[in-house]
Structures are given as C-alpha cells and as structure tokens.
Image (cartoon, rainbow, N blue to C red; front, side, top):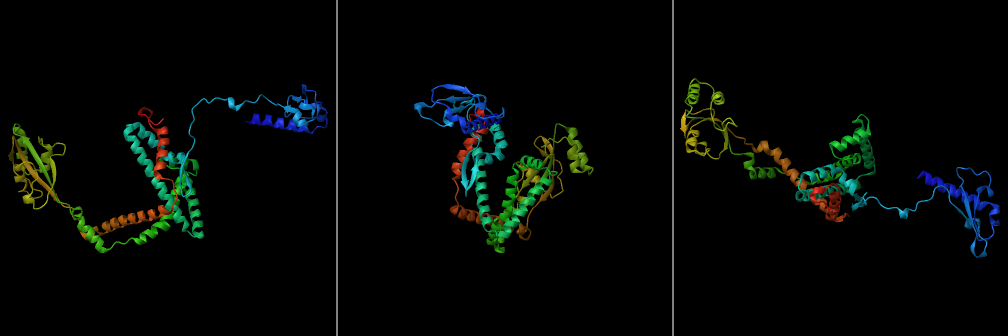
Length: 414
C-alpha cells in the first residue's frame, strides 16, 4: 500500500510540474509519440519523486490542447487491474445486522460470541436432531433477555434526573476501574478472566452493572411498591401446601437376615444380641445378605397410625414391625429360608408450623406476584417499543450459528 501511494504521489507531482512549465505549449500537433525527460521542463526535481519518463502525445484534429491533455505520466511498476484478480476462497461473512431494539442494532458477531464455545461443544456432543432445537431455544432465550434488558434500561434511564445520570456515570467508571484493579491493574487480564469465568466482554459486564443499578433504583422499586402480601394470604398458602410443610412421618428400619444354611452365622447374631451387644455393631459384623449396599436399612413414609401401616411387601415383616418402638429390635424370627432380626431405628417427622413457615411463604408470594407485575410492565413497554420480530432475528442468528458452529458430520446448513 505504501509503495502504491508513493507511485501515485510521484505521478501527481510530475503532472503538476509538467502542466506548469512554460515550454509545454510549444509541442506541435505532429501526430507523433516520443519519450521526454522531466529535465526538459523543470530543473532540480528529486529523483525519488520524479517519474522515469513521460510520454508526449500529439493532439488530434489540429487543435492546440493544454499540457495536461498532451502528457501522460506512468511512474513506478505497472498498475494491476483489480478486475482481473480471481477469488481464491469462498466468501466469508464478516458481520451481519439481524435487527434492532429501540434503535439499538443487534449484530450477529456480538450476539453469538458469548455462546460460541458452548454452541460448538454441544454441536459435537449432540445429534443434529437434538442440537438444532436446543440451539434455537438458547438463541431465543438470549434474544428475549436482550430485549427485556434494553426495554427496562431505556425506561429506567428516561426516569433519571440529570444529577442521577451523572452519578451513574461516576459509578460505572469506578466499576471499570475496580475490574482492572482486581486483576493486578491489567485491563487485558481482567478481560480474559471475564471471558473465561462469566463468558462476557468488559463492555457487557459494565452494561450489566448499569442495567442492574438502573432497574434496581427505578423500575423494581416501583414494581415492589405495587406488591402486597397480607397475613391472610400467608395463611391460605400454608393451608394449600399443608402436606409440603407437614410431610408424612418416615419410619427407618434395619434388618439382619442370615441364611439358615449358615448355622454359625445365625448363632453369631443370636449370641451377640443375647449378650447385649449393639444391634448396629452386630449387623455390621454379621453374614446378613439383606440389601448390603445400604447396610440393611429401609425408609418408609406412612400416613395414619403406625400400628396400622404397611411397610414391607412381607406380611411377616409387617407384623413384626408394628410391634416395635423407636430404638427397639425383635427377637429372631423365621423369614422364608432365613432367620431374621428387625430393628425400628427411628420415626422422623419434619412438620413446620405456620409461625415458622410464614417468612418462607411471604417471600414465595412476593416473588410470584412481583414476577406477574413485571410481566405486565414489560408487556406495556413492548406495546410502545420498536424492535425487530424475535422470530425473524432468531432464525437469522441460527442460520449464521449453524454455519459457524454446527457439526459438519451432522449435516449443517451449507
């Protein structure tokens, strides 16, 4: 590029010199062509800017013409005609605008960059029939988030006073400085960490802080003021979800079962328990073959009275179980071709009273109602906002994402 500019500069200077010389008009219309030197027209022209030669061409029709019409300058190497160049690769999409949100353009590169690694990884992991709907859902979700954020941001920004806007700019400047200071003062290192840990650029991070601050200070404050949760609301929710706060009790049993073919094993358990050794210690040391992966422990939820509940699929076990109290165990009893001992480890209950549950219920109701209020607020904003159809933007973005990240072996979009 610098060589071409130097050649053009030399040609311009030569034309200027030649067109300004007094002797140029003395060329007669002889219909001849000859090479002339710059020195014939002007002295002391530096060699590094002067053309190697000039061509004087006669004028046609016998009429006198100016020096600029009679002289053609060619300096430096021959110029290459761009029209003759042949493309050596297929066209590559550099950037594409897929739509607007309130006048803010949505560009494919900027949109897809935070998703690129995940889109490519999932394209390799998933069959195409699964990747396509997954990718479209992810793109649509991100689009919806961008539209929502932009609508809320614009509305919140419009409500700020000049003083508040100045304070916001100061806050964001400090946030950017804090980001760099957290990475030993290196902005490039901070940007790298953001990309690796949060999948966003520095500008996206600052914008998210701006978004969070704006919405919290204006929109959410207004929406929160519209939400009210009364004590009666809390009571009604508690009654509706009574089973959630008062689940059925759970009985925990432990069973030792030793085959009768192992007389020594049966005797070991019987004698150990008779000596008063711990049931759990004996169970661990025994030849019991009942659910060794859990140590012979079963848990059963039951409703109603314990004495009427059915825990096991065996009537024999149920009959023995109903006679036990927490911490006690049975004597030996026959269970098919084995000898067994059963212990009721404990009965657990997790009942939560209305008094203890009220804060949880209040927060649950507040969150639900605030979400509904926010949806109504966004619906009103969307009605008066201007943005490209989400479906159209999603489809365009998917085509680009498919070309870039779709697995070639899965038949991506050509």
